[in-house]
Image (cartoon, rainbow, N blue to C red):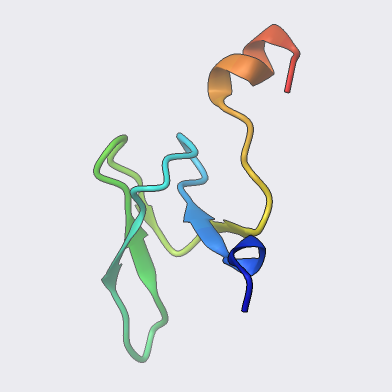
Length: 61
């Protein structure tokens, strides 16, 4: 497998790559972001880079 096909997980709130699996089991996975405090079942999984919040506010990517 090449390095280009690695799927990364991002926080849906702050787009940090520091999202960690907090707990999992019968109810599904729960993730936690130590950067912004997000806790929940939703994460962004992609092979593409996520634009930073600053570039979205400026309207550039």
